Image (tube, rainbow over the protein chains, first blue to last red):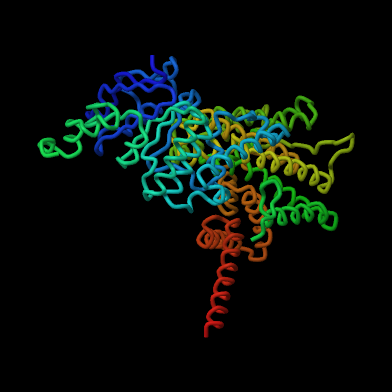
Length: 258
Length: 333
């Protein structure tokens, strides 16, 4: 069995099958891409993995353990991390507080210690801050530490979202359009940082991406969704030649001309 | 900008806090009993505001029944110490714990409800607690109320308002310490996370239900302690003290002071406890002036009184920038 697998997952909103019997499997440390036109069900797929939307059917396994029955926070604690298309940063908080929140699953102090302000809690807090600072440094954001997150541009928020997710030391990290709102240079930097950190921490990545250049250069394997169904998977080179994929992107009848 | 900071606090906050503490310690002996009483009331209001601000300002849960938890603390402390003969110093924290347990139960509807709906449920809780106070005269003295004597410390009754003031000051400082520690901890960040984005919070392993319940429990604990102190300070409690107007006042403390800010809770509680006394000079226009001032603050300072500091600083740096620009123009010309 693969390290991380989704089997026959379906997500239904009212009468709409947003995700229909999709299966995918990732080996540990692999980077897989998910592509598809708007409304193909990419974000619904990872929302269902996170547990933010209910699954109509299917299973999710991480390292042999089933996750589909767990509430969202337990899935996160089990090692499923993610970022958001719109970053979902806490705007009233400083950048460092945002990133430190990402370490919640690994907190070293109890509620009572937090309340009483024991020396042990203070030490845990310093350690958490150091880890968050290191992660911000890796994305070149250390100078924004004490800035209010709500004051920063979207591209920066996307990086903070990524840093916040990585501080949680996820085993699988799902990235929802990690480079949207960035120019090409910025996108390449973020992807490089992401690939380096994922390699060091042995994080398995599942990446939704619209920027084809980015995803083709990053992923070992690409899955293509269209109207909620998986229509193809393969290496980036295979996907670029696949007539079904070209048709999904360019419309019917285009494959012959492509 | 100065880079000075102490335990993550900015320089103006540290200077302001130290000055306030110095005044709170040194000034009272020069004043009379009425002022000690008023200052004690302000401190209790700080405890109430700090607790409510954690629940509402940080964790984002609206509550209109903070006064009910205050009542639970007040009656529990009084009952345990007067009727059961427990030491006040044991009865007071127990009153806080009993209030916290009630907060835990109120937290359950909050798991399913948000905003106005939650506010209405907390109003219901307030009504129920008012009725219970009236219907349980054996414990609460019913509508006629119950007297709650001053405690003794080291065999010495704290009958003077000054001595009890210092006890309340110590407990208020402990409250601020706990709130400060909490907000700079995983728990405090979890509160902020569920207020800002429940979806993001959950994907960062923050459990929604436990976190909301924790916020209700902690806030109710502070309110219970505040209530226990209030009972002994005033010496007599009846259900009218803990009605909806008291809850609304607590909400006004934190909104005027600054939501989500401990400094805001402190400033809001002090200003709004002292202001009505100062406004006595206006006689029958007192409430009118009070309401008008509230409106002005809320319109001019959407972040509350604590927003005043950054606003002034921004104005100062702006005028610096314009004077620098003017100077440069002067050079160019």
